[in-house]
Length: 600
Image (cartoon, rainbow, N blue to C red; front, side, top):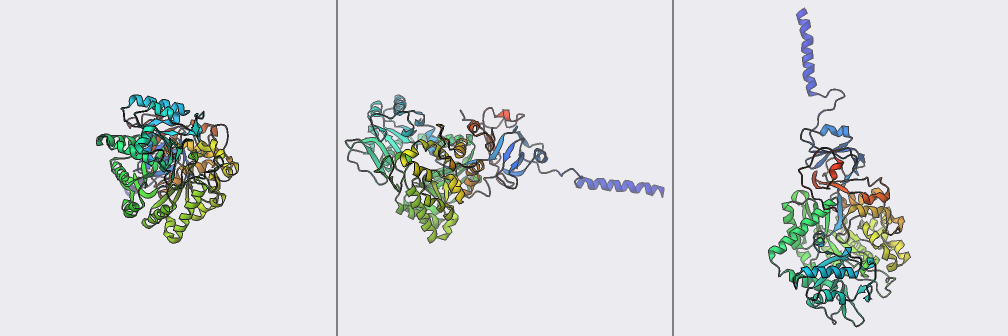
């Protein structure tokens, strides 16, 4: 009996030990599947209301696996987990460029950057230097000029625009095509005008205007559709180049644009927009691999072509969620404020005989709206002036009445810069998205009041706060290459409305810090139907993130522009690392991964 009594406890102890191996010991949580990536010692703004601010997160298979404290997320670290110690750096959902032009951005990085020129004389000097390097007949192309920002007015001038003698003198044998920063005007030299067939007797086209001197001769400045013949002449020139040269140029433009975007923390890009042929090419490139997620809109096609072909182009989540096409736009209902071609209910204060231009006829926009509704496509219409916005809202309202299902398509007005007070609540009432670009307000501020007068500017210029308060969805972006794609600059403008000259442009319309962050992240994700996958850092969502040197939500406003993007991650993969960013982490992790650093 003694022997059996001593044997029973041994048996029980062995059984308990075996059970303990299969069950958690009190006070010690079970092991969890190891993450591919862990970010820790960070200040993470998740935009998830259940866990709005955390210290660490884990990524598994390209998605957020868990959020929590360093200690909680340590349970996800296995022998092969890559760990980034961020030493307090700020992490947010990846920025989405809500409105940009991707290939144009790449082209701008390969052309003359006219935005750097302080005046017309400097632009002429840039063209002269380019001519010295060019072959006779080769086109000289640049973009980014804005006469309202020049430090001196050219003399003589027409509406602040120079006469052509100085440009023609430095480029007699090379056509010159210089695009305004807004994309709604160009300046061409005499040879380019000749190749385009524009003479003294050429009438203004529908939706455009030719700027003329006192004798009625074209000076070279062409607004909106008036520039189309020059672009056609340029395209004829390009068609004479070897096909392999054109293909290499196009691929380089796309590569430069995407590297530029991810270097600014952009993980998703809404392209406004491309024709069918270019969209096909972009889809082929996506199959080879993109560093960011691209959302393409169809534009530049005749109404008949849209009617016949739009439906077959619908593409969702192609190339591992890196290429989507489900939108039409941007359709131009008017021009731009800087070129006096934005369409207003009343004339410009500084040009009493002008109230702007309807670029694409409203009849055509109504037809495009019908086609988009029929085929289940999102529609994005450019509207800057208050009349343009009213006309587009009317088209949307009429279409919704005829086809109620179109309400679910998240139609958008691009820019929505100047609104009549009566139209502000209509965005929320109709469910129309206001796709705005905060940086435009700061850039345009110096000439808004001269163009429109104090009262109109205060009541309707860039009224983000009023739209948000009314319940409207407001986005953010840059309209790159019109503005630098940098979201930090856009964020700063959104929360300060600082015009760069020590003045705050109607500061009652600022966004809160969180509104500004949401405009660049969750709101943009919603606007492209990706709010269930992107826009916040929530378990199960795609791990698109940006790591920034300072906390945008808490930094003093005067320090926001000093922050820098350190890392950009798409699907948990590092697609950009800033040189010197290793100071923010310990160890040598990611050392072997590619670096795309284009920050000056």
